[in-house]
Image 1 (cartoon, rainbow, N blue to C red):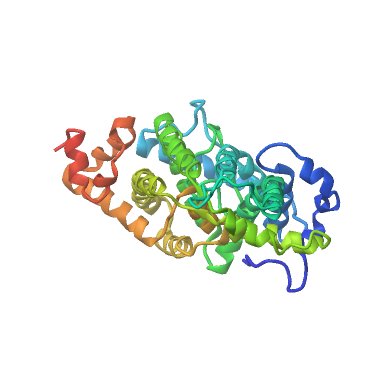
Image 2 (image 1 turned 90 degrees about the horizontal axis):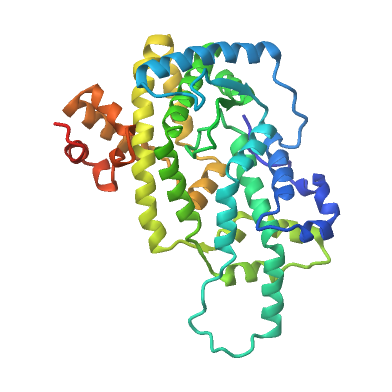
Length: 393
């Protein structure tokens, strides 16, 4: 599946109707221009091509397999898979709808990020004199463009994620409680064809993994802990105004294509400075995400080997895929603080293996029992410390 941009020489923004009405665009209120975000997310998700609806027979098959995954996960984990207590439903969507749903799910984080990036770093050399008129004008221009820039960056991130997302939890960010899961059959089936994987085996593999994530992140204290950490992280950026000013200073406002080029450049926004507080938060975010991924992989091995004939082949293909970060995943790593490379997956597996070797499979049930039982950063590489703290031998 291609994740490249539009053909060379083509300006993708020419397809965005909102750029035909710049006055309305700049007049939009709020820290993020959501209309810009939605248009760009949809454009990139579909690579500018018409998107067909998911076929009814495909929907029905996913629904059948989802019932199997839901039952197996509930039995293996003892966790509720649906906040309503009923059966977890699955909804098959196209890439554009997945991107729009993702924007809604991540909205609070993106708005916190926008607020953080709206406060520039204090200049230690400031003298209190009247600012240079040109600098003042550029600063006002930056404030004017801020919501548009954040809208574009948000759209870029979700559009790129949608190009290859299997479901909701390719990146394990909590979503609002819901009794249904989103999956993208086009991405799943395309990947299966590329790797010559049996269709139903791959679909069930994906559904098992999605339901496992949904069950754990559906635990209120787990969701709230991770949401709080992510909110603190995105709120902690400091901004070097020179990075934005240098980009905007070269823009010819009479040339819309030049403005679009700057706003479409991720590095314009990513001039943000990561702080010491954020570096500490990264360790605390990993203390939730790393054992989560180790736990999901462990349960996948336990459940999947019983249900999926080609489990080993499917697992190897997907694990190769997941350590190759896409453009959208790199955005998430930088903006939200969730980094998932091979090192993080290996740490998660080692933590879970250490728990099972010392205290048996039943000890894993304790991981998600309460907020107090969530591992600390120091315990991720020392599962014996975690067992001792929660008073297990």
